[in-house]
Length: 318
Image 1: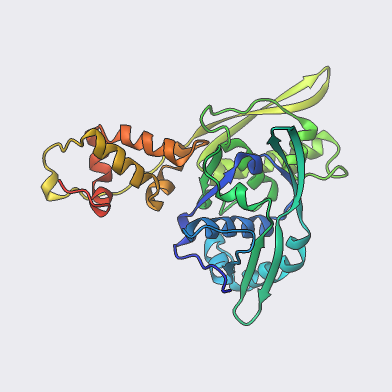
Image 2 (image 1 turned 30 degrees about the horizontal axis):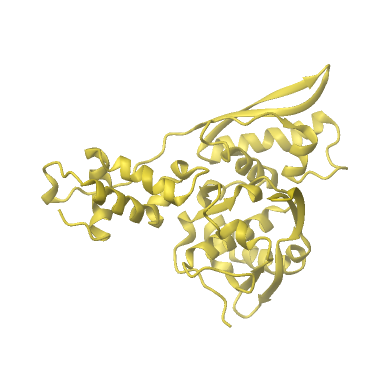
């Protein structure tokens, strides 16, 4: 069986994770996190669905292009991952009828590097597959370009933890030990608070503020004089709008019927370009809800003008 290849440009690919995975506890190096993200995009963009037997291919050229590193660095990242990524584990909370349990799993069940082709072939572990493919439950999404320039492993994790709260722009207080575990800080690392803040927290926030689509600040929570946790506030930076050319036939306001708005809202919800530009609107919902939101937007002239070229592509005729 040949590995599944991504048929889309990953530059603006959408990373989609179940919230259980977004809030999981794990420790991955930057290169390992990047490879996981590329594999998640690959799994999603094949549009074929994947199972715990599916083989996903990551090309060194794609890694180099996405993260702006040399080909040599990309080759090294893929080759090193064969040993390191196979050993990595994570834990997450799983709700069942019997109650809430903590699941411990590997990320991959199989991994292979093909030196001649500079291709890493990954098979996700059975517990990972539903966390990156099922859309009927709550999930969080973001464009991979938002973390492309983040070079700290804690910065990538902090960004993911925060955007799970994108709808409200703030996180609830996170207890210190839980926060450290979710970031992947080991028990024997940065035990002194001044070291934790100067080596983990503040450099991560600085990178996020410089290179992503949000601006973050934090608040310390204390019990007496001891810091027991943190909470965060963040704002969305102004987003560039989709560039569109107005068709000569759209000089007047075109009004869509209710059935048309529902139909094309659903189509646009699954359009890769719309997902990338409006990932902040998908937030922690699902694609059915995203389609309903787009249908509501299509009642307004400005959004019909914005989406008009895409509406035509999806079969709309004025």
